[in-house]
Image (tube, rainbow, N blue to C red; front, side, top):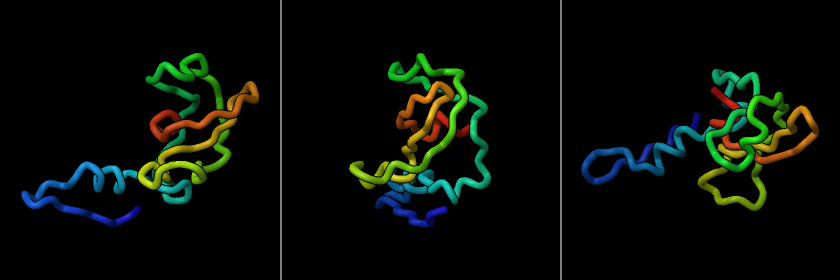
Length: 91
């Protein structure tokens, strides 16, 4: 787990720091469990809810630095490949 902690002047952890703490690479997610099937609360890709999937890897190219480690490329059981947020594939 990344150990960067930024504290604001009043002692509260900044939102960005909190997000950085929660961003883990695939290898660092050992304690996390993959969902049994894809699930999303977002409109995009809701038609894929309930489908089995395979994680192909992290998306690291062409994205903002602050979301690295939180976006993954997956292949659904029907062969469709999409990008998924960590909350859509990990519980």
